[in-house]
Image (cartoon, rainbow, N blue to C red; front, side):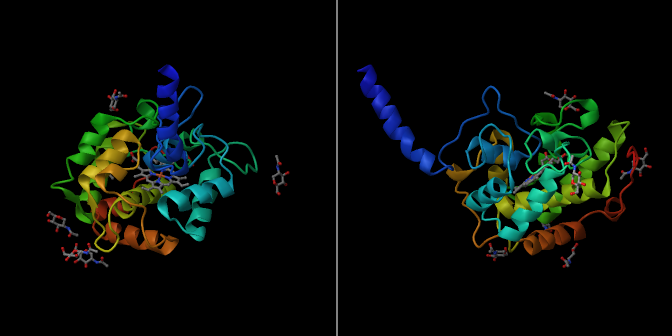
Length: 250
Ligand code: HEM
Ligand SMILES: *[C@@H]1O[C@H](CO)[C@@H](O)[C@H](O)[C@H]1NC(C)=O
Ligand SMILES: *[C@@H]1O[C@H](CO)[C@@H](O)[C@H](O)[C@H]1NC(C)=O
Ligand SMILES: *[C@@H]1O[C@H](CO)[C@@H](O)[C@H](O)[C@H]1NC(C)=O
Ligand SMILES: *[C@@H]1O[C@H](CO)[C@@H](O)[C@H](O)[C@H]1NC(C)=O
Ligand SMILES: *[C@@H]1O[C@H](CO)[C@@H](O)[C@H](O)[C@H]1NC(C)=O
Ligand SMILES: *[C@@H]1O[C@H](CO)[C@@H](O)[C@H](O)[C@H]1NC(C)=O
């Protein structure tokens, strides 16, 4: 009886490894994760190695292509950004934990993480995320809502964190992250995303397949990301468009 249930479990589980979007497991002992909800999700699904470590250019590009249909050029660009977070000189690999290094790519005023001044920015923080969510009115998030939510998080961090700062890289990444959740989780023409799909990814670090989400088609390239960022920027309060560098050292 026991061996039969083991056999059934294996039989049911085995095919899911051939389709990483079906397989999902949270990080276990020794696995590392970082401040990016999407990359954490890809590791939880085994698109990226589940331990969260030692991603070279080939692993990075294949995961981004297989899971999200990110093209060669954008995949290369994202890898080149990611590898800057590895403190080892001339590194050719990076890990999800490297991404948490403050003010390399990781920055203040995240949508779902506390500022590094208050503690680790790696874990999802429901209080921080509630402020972001409060700007997502109705079942569909559009560029106006995403821009307002981002501005609100910047204002709150500026008002509460004595070491608040956003570098040019930080503020550009923040804009890119807002563009990314609309573009990769929603549809690209109107730049909108279903709120429940976006919340599911942030809260569970799991691809929202069961809510009807599908891998984007056609492939997503660097110009697509830039265009989405420009549309969001256009919806952003003018006084936030030019950002203070308070708290930045260098
Ligand atoms: C190799 C590719 C990627 C790298 C290196 C990367 C890196 C990062 C880093 C360092 C952060 C933390 C920024 C912060 O302090 O808030 C972050 C956040 C984020 N990333 Fe990624 N990311 C990648 C791909 C993606 C993709 C494909 C998506 C698509 C949805 C995505 C969506 C997000 C979002 C929405 C956040 C904001 C989280 C928050 O503010 O709470 N990322 N990413
Ligand atoms: C890193 O690369 C540079 C330029 O190729 C080289 O001069 C330097 O010695 C390398 N450093 C290490 C630690 O390998
Ligand atoms: C979430 O962030 C807030 C604001 O920084 C902080 O007070 C709270 O302790 C954080 N919660 C967790 C569980 O880290
Ligand atoms: C987003 O939706 C809100 C509320 O329905 C609306 O006021 C706003 O004009 C919309 N923005 C865009 C860019 O369509
Ligand atoms: C940040 O706060 C300072 C006052 O502490 C204010 O002068 C500045 O305009 C604020 N910047 C943003 C972007 O909110
Ligand atoms: C974009 O929005 C318009 C107006 O709401 C709608 O008619 C159209 O179907 C949407 N396009 C896509 C691709 O969802
Ligand atoms: C910029 O936003 C305004 C509304 O705030 C809109 O009318 C205009 O079409 C947008 N321009 C671009 C280039 O997206």
